[in-house]
Image 1 (tube, rainbow, N blue to C red):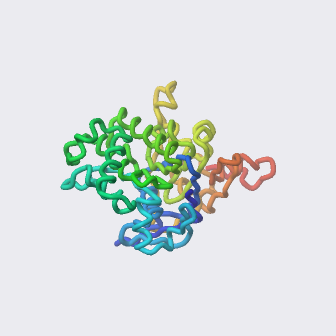
Image 2 (image 1 turned 90 degrees about the vertical axis):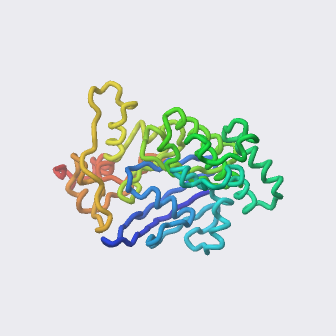
Image 3 (image 1 turned 120 degrees about the vertical axis):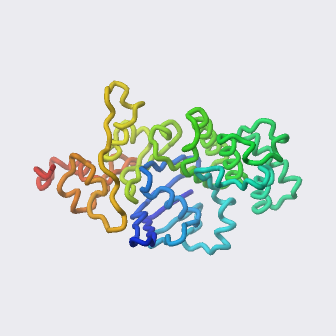
Length: 333
């Protein structure tokens, strides 16, 4: 349903060119939920905006391909992209208050999406909008149809954004940190709703998050992103039970739910590198206490752990080939 091939995205800034996305390759199948996890500033949102051809000013696709259900997004005209967004791909943004128009009723905002992309009457759109409100768990939808966004709670507003995103039954749904501003109980309800949409609408879902714990129970596949690159990708159980990249291990070791026996949680020191200057080697090397010298010199190779689990890591490469490799001996810092 979604295939990204060796994607590079640059952003022109006052300080220079930011290499925001660097050689990302990913794929998502129908009825599959892929979670992209990483720290703020690692390129997750820019990657998602490129999928819907909605990059901010100054950002450009330098090279690579983005294919959604057979359509090449990177070469799309603005007219085609307008029809593509909403119909082929639905988007759930992080903050529902900025995604919803405060001066238009909730009902009209849902019906607008239906009228733009579907050949139906206003009356039919209203009835379908009410059904969508029911689908996403809004009580008394007919009575609340003419209310405004400020009359809804944060969790309910996010449900409305989801209703708009899935109104035309898109093949692909992009959810960019949809639970960030919500409490834990509402978080789970929203995530369960995404799973329901994936299953019942036959959609593929890309869920962006900075929290591995949040995605652990809903994702089919997890991609770990850092400094514009995918460092590790695999099925959720593979990532959580057998993490390979030092960054993935660091993220998991900092989660209370996965380290209940520890008195103190581990932390990852330092900050992510600047993406203005081209990086050499593993981008996590500066923060990796067990880095090899080669981590600072050469890009790590892609290592196959299983048919569905891959990592870009010199450590994993060494572990897999240590019986046949001598030149890495003594390279640990």
